[in-house]
Length: 321
Ligand SMILES: Cc1cc2nc3c(=O)[nH]c(=O)nc-3n(C[C@H](O)[C@H](O)[C@H](O)COP(=O)(O)O)c2cc1C
Image (cartoon, rainbow, N blue to C red):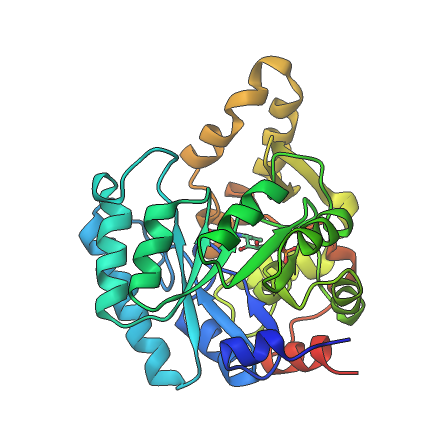
């Protein structure tokens, strides 16, 4: 059932991609995934524990992280790029512009493009001979088809089971994956709730040719997720998870409980994301380990996460019988 199309395309051993996660996917994790035979992807604020609002500095920090990956491994890896807002030109988005300039100079080849389909961005990456792994935040058949026609090499179908910013529709992994598989002819990667070997097999049974895994990779030895947050995930079940905004869920830390209560009030529903941002987003609890002061975002499958293996152990477990 597991075909070689994705691993051949990406020049890796197993069709498993470690999904980019803000603050939590640094050079050490990405290199470990590469060494284990998968593809690691650097995400926003990779390797950092403090934010900078400067676009040039943001790109420079990512450049340093890319150098670190290359010191640790000669295996392939990718970098996440957020698409400009619909209608916005790349030249007008200073963060995207600076990041792309650096990534092309650094000769990065694999781009996890996340957001709306953007012809200008796809063309630019293709002009630099880049490989595009496209992920819509809210997947639709129409977006997948358009991304394919613009040159996406792989398409990620994300179910609302996932951790991170949730798709805006009640579309679970079990239904979104076959819908996208039927709509495009490029290989599809299943994302959302793939935490063990059963999830990987289910993804392939649904027609996916690879898996795109976030939450499970956070709970590995090499991941920069704070130790206390790793332990909290191991110790928690889905009964301790609550929605804290329209598109975020968290284990019920002290702060997450307050957010979850506020989110229940109709007048507060819409603006919870800005409240979460003001509190520092994922950084306080997940990066710094101050569990009471932040949220811990996870997928719906944490009942099956029981330990903190090395990346190599995890990849072996997920990809082999
Ligand atoms: C804590 C956390 C942070 C995330 N941050 C990002 C991000 O910054 N950019 C992005 O494209 N996706 C982000 N994601 C989504 C992942 O890239 C991926 O789509 C998702 O984790 C897959 O589902 P899973 O968590 O069930 O494996 C994040 C996910 C998690 C759990």
